Amino acid sequence: MKLKIAVLPGDGIGPEIVAQAVESVKAVCRKFGHEAHFEEALVGACAIDAVGSPYPDATHKLCMNSDAVLFGAIGSPKYDNNPNAKVRPEQGLLAMRKKLGLYANIRPVATFPSLLHKSPLRRDLVEGADFMCIRELTGGIYFGRPQGRSEDGETAYDTCVYSVGEIERIVRLAYNYALKRRRKLTVVDKANVLCTSRLWRQVAQNLEKEYPEVETEYMFVDNVAMQIIQWPKRFDVLVTENMFGDILTDEASVITGSLGMLPSASIGLHTSVFEPIHGSYPQAAGKNIANPLATILSAALMFEYAFDLKEEGLAIRRAVDAVLAEGTVTEDIAENGKAFSTSEVGKRVVEIILND
Ligand code: IPM
Ligand code: MG
Image 1 (tube, rainbow, N blue to C red):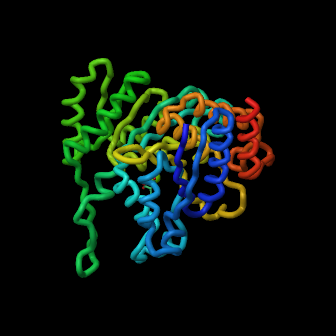
Image 2: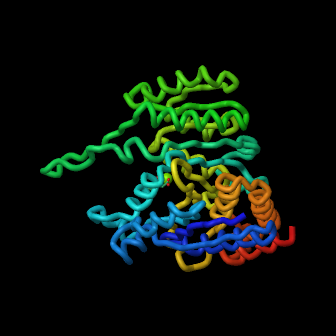
Image 3: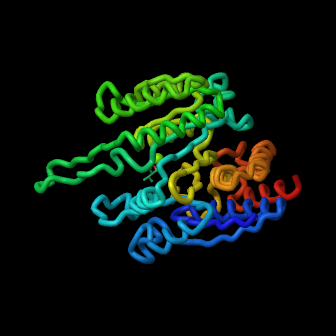
């Protein structure tokens, strides 16, 4: 199969971790006889610095003309520390989501047996936890207008907007995942306070009738935030709006032991984007110490979701399990100070894929 992959390394540790993921993809292609073509483009702070826009047209064109996008991370302290910056790296990510119509962000949360001791939760609570957060990604308060400040600068406002159509497509997608898993769906909202949440609940209740095989429950987001920590094993598929999903997925990610392990897929109307859920970790940029595994696992998701190549995805997953088991890992998860570099971990993953 011919795979045309857009590579968007972005900022901070992005280039280092994406380089390792690309090596894994090449290894899988060699092993299974696929032909991958990679093309790089700018996004984020580096794109602002180079061409003045965080999501340049050339990058969008490349994404539209590719079969999948492999994305690193964006963000830079230069902009984080300057709330008045007119153009921000994050705007690039939001523009990419909107223009590619990436309305669903899928974040599987599964534990790795060899990392259980790294979880902030007790082993018995977290062992075997396996759920999936589905976050709406192109609506809600991230995109609602009006947004701004009053003329005197004394007030600021954001607007949360959802339409029936936007809610319906994401809840349907969540039901379809639930059908393939343990058939339980948690619809997360704040319907006791927010009007948009009441619309979510109404739309979900209407759809519920079409999926009698799935057990549907409705929970307020604050309660879910608590139960993810208290009883993570009770969840199968969660679906929620943009900002609740942003917060809950960061929370969910740490129960597995490291933020550096979780991949995500953003899918929608055009090309899908695969990226680690962590950020650009600027303090580690250029030091060859960041954990590349979340990005390598994002490449596994890319094979599975974008190309429907399950064996190829599995080959990457097996290699990741193997490096974890043998301890070829970066400092965030290393034991007794025995840490390997980003490129050493990536190289070992490649070796295992090729020799498997
Ligand atoms: C994420 C990030 C982004 C978001 C930021 C960088 C804009 O936190 O992908 O979860 O809030 O969506
Ligand atoms: Mg986030």
